[in-house]
Length: 440
Image (cartoon, rainbow, N blue to C red):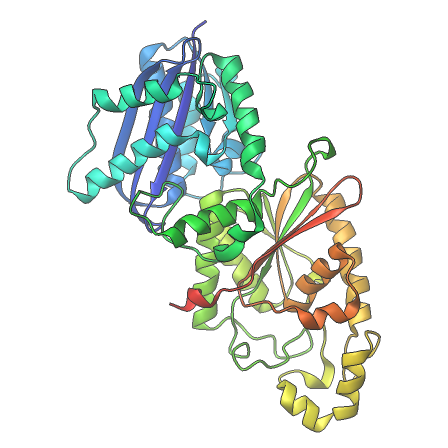
């Protein structure tokens, strides 16, 4: 039986925005590029473009040999996991495309594998060529030079990137494994733009801004941390998202679980949509869990709609109850309750005036919630949509830092952090904070 490798990608400059896809069919035995497909598809989301790329690649392979087996390689974890049957497909625009793709070949003759973006350059280039052609008011057309360029890139050379060599299925997959390990260890500096939902999409053109490229890299680091030792297995990874702004946020008022439970402001809703787009672009979030408060449920809903996932509510993720301080600024609390405030600032067991929750009690609650979620989501990447104090507490506990470290952290609205928990009991932390650009 003949074996093909299909590499596919899709991108949207705006998500949704002008979109296109690219697909390439490779002979697994020789590494030869057999067919290329690319198309500008008008305005669509990044994930729809990726599915269109997959469908086009499978159909191209079927044209060559309906009896072949196909190994699909894509840098969209969402598409790979959904087509492999491990994740649900709920988005109405993706369901029919997934069904069509599943009907091209019998299921037992198609396998799927996630690859890092840098190992999917051929399909990525085709998708960008298609989007560039669409911008000119044209449709993409195949050229011999495109295939020739890739054939040269695919020729194994000792100094070349391991993921670019496709000299047979076995060697291709071995090279991919090597490339995956190397690409996962991104530096923490990539977090400079993790919370931004730039409109670059997963297939950014050469004209895309450096900030957009940083967003993609940072979102990948958040949702796919690769800093674990190889023998520890997949960690339970919690991507911690603070809710978007409420009317109280810019006023810096205490807003816990015992106050008015405000909704997101217009700015907060925009922040939620932009973070949702950034996370959807990478497609690596497998579950969403949120605090029961309105602002977190609204933020989680924006992400869930983009990812086609449900939102589970976890009471343990609620914000600290600030008692009589709810709705007040720090200055107002100092004026009205100076002794209580001073005690609270120096003693983690001290409660806010009026029977609020101490930071020590919050830490006990968060630790119990952490253990519960680790057990429930072992080896998975989960978005936890919660609040300032819970996120700081997750980070503090992971670092083994003292309680007073809570006062030395600042978390912007709609910011992202991540903690990965390994089988040996250790944890690794990735931080991101500045989301001020989301207001632009």
